[in-house]
Image (cartoon, rainbow, N blue to C red; front, side, top):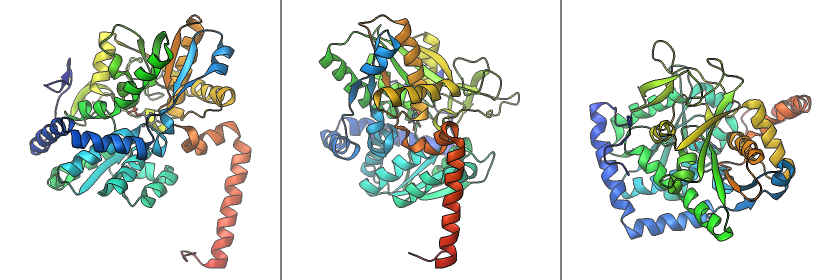
Length: 419
Ligand SMILES: *Cc1c(COP(=O)(O)O)cnc(C)c1O
């Protein structure tokens, strides 16, 4: 852990004066909890019985044979409860918040995956949950909104700015500045003001620790670890036990979107558009316009379109310890269907970016070497995006028929009648 909250020139704590005290308290409480066997026991129990850890480690033997080079192994993080790695952090922070005597959790969410994980963790741990979500995202991501509400969370649509994730973060920060006595702000990625980047990495490092054991059990000669990078929490958790070693290579896959032009992707480390900035309480590389405002991004995967990147990931990129590559939408979709057909495993669209980068590497590296790709999430959640891509006509017919069925039901039962 850093003591300053900085990773080279990135990170820090750039917040309104009023948030200094809650951040200091959080840092102290986190350090204290991680040294408390009772806290660690409870965390371990929830990891095993609620999240479903350890997650499996699969030899993608058919896929590797088809590619003809190094062997690909898949860390099946998407089999964790709620479908992705986000639950590791949500459970850790919710448990910490309860230990601090907080009654209420607030969170930001973009596509809804972090909101979903937080809502489930709060239901299990017994905390009130309020999720801020851009109004544009609320209308686009209704299945996740419905699931969050099933878990008992209140979803608050944010109407400021461009009504997307960055605006939801601003709104959550505003809430926290007025409510921190009773409320914990549960940030969803390895970013934000210190101590969030360290804390989120710590709760996600279980992915890398299990992977290290699973590699040793199989006596693999691992040449590279590959993860997708949005804010960077699955990547930093997966890489974390390996960072201080000279090997294996650590490869981060960013969203290449529809091309290299401005506004066409979310490439902060591989493109030329990113600049140093201070946004959302920390310093890092951000995609920004000429006025220093965060720029619009584009990606088929809702989880990789954040305009910034966690400070430690930016620092490790500049140091050369993490290599970044970008994967365009089309290649990610191809990787998704490749692993589905060859391995019977459905990658989330985010994770499919890592899958695509692993496929490239497997072709370059010799037989006998291994590559481990973190499948950060499973793809069930993406059926509303992948179906229109893979079978547009059938999907449109299905939606039209569903709507017709719903409307017919409304005539019979009357709108809003409980059934
Ligand atoms: C949210 C999400 C990501 C991106 O977030 P990171 O903090 O970069 O890990 C990646 N994969 C999945 C499945 C997600 O839900």
